[in-house]
Image (cartoon, helix red, strand yellow):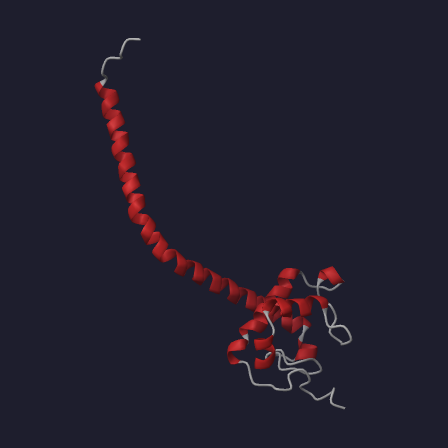
Length: 154
């Protein structure tokens, strides 16, 4: 097969594309570390905003479903004080979600999950648990958090 004759226009176009490709590659090498430096803080800000929104939704759901037994801010009533240091430090988020979802047998705490014929979705239960977790920073010391009114002591 005979060799093709040199095509200066093709060479020029090929070289132009190679220079542009090299420039893009250098640009990516420069931009990637900058992205890696900024992105974690952006993710953390987005996560914080998401948790704040979820806690706001949880506060609203807590107000409409839980205050009759647990008080307006979770200080307790006929139900345990959910804003207490003792409760919040001893229960994990999953445990709180499970208590809300399935209820507490032998008590007035019924199941709230739709899976157990309750009225709340899993996301709504997670929102309430997130709201309760948001109370942990200023949680009061309530040693009798399980029975704040002393109803079980008699």
